[in-house]
Image 1 (cartoon, rainbow, N blue to C red):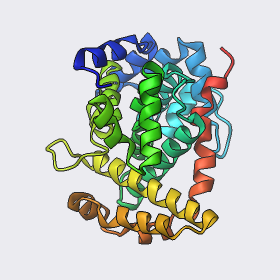
Image 2 (tube, rainbow, N blue to C red):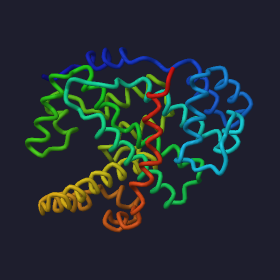
Image 3 (spheres, rainbow, N blue to C red):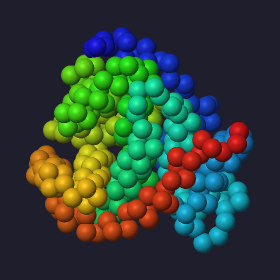
Length: 299
């Protein structure tokens, strides 16, 4: 059953806001004159955030040569922008519902989200984006589908129908969402990101990861669109290898053929060629799992 805009707003309003420390971090890091000392003080004032930031910075994802035991050292080693993105990851994974009755498989959801984040980061690296800025691409990929979780949590019966129709008719979920709900997950995801006061470019990348040809299409948004399609491409290839199903390979090929011109121009490589230099993707995803294991940290 279609929902109206007021119902969408009501769902967004029910999502908890970030803790004050995360808002302070986002506020501080919007300034080019952000003081590392001020940032450290904000994080250290929140012991749970401190613990989670240190857990992430010391994870295999960052691969530091020595253990970091203080927030001050964490900022020095990985940089202000990366710490900002770590805080966003911590706050987001903590605020999103953990379960749902719609049948949305959360393990698959996070596996896909991690894949998109890692692929986006690797694409950014290949495009010459600075190491410190690559964190923006990873987090944008990690969060691009958060609207699915919200629909599954707040509209379990309706969203179960969405998932079943998408699977039975082999249709993209966002198209079925539009048909049955009137909105898709990118729209509600962007609304929540705005409520959380996330950076505008990050909000845009969530909002437009299924749409192109708009004036807000930044390099980050193009990267997330491309990484999302690349992840689906790889998933179909893996499934075809397991099931020996030719139509899945044809479906994967169609993803590459149907990429919008602006995405193809940004990539400058066809998906099959990109797939060749993603041989270590599974290993990179394993390193990034810490980003979604944070909810298991004792509080």
